[in-house]
Length: 61
Image 1 (tube, rainbow, N blue to C red):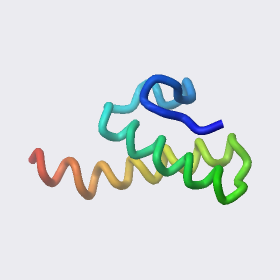
Image 2 (image 1 turned 90 degrees about the vertical axis):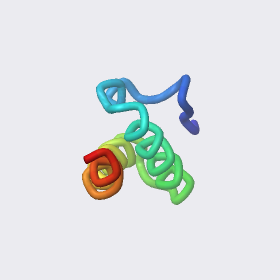
Image 3 (image 1 turned 60 degrees about the horizontal axis):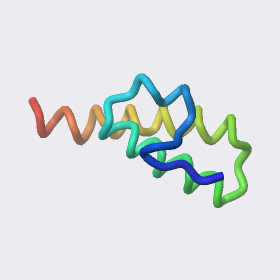
């Protein structure tokens, strides 16, 4: 089931909105590739946090 800004895994609740959006995008792409939902969520959160460090914080800071 694809996720969106209104419906996403509870484990993404604590992420900043911009990071959550990226995690949702990554998780949905992984699901399309056939990855297990739990694994897709874990990987998406990790990759979105990496993305945040390299892109969002550079812009803000």
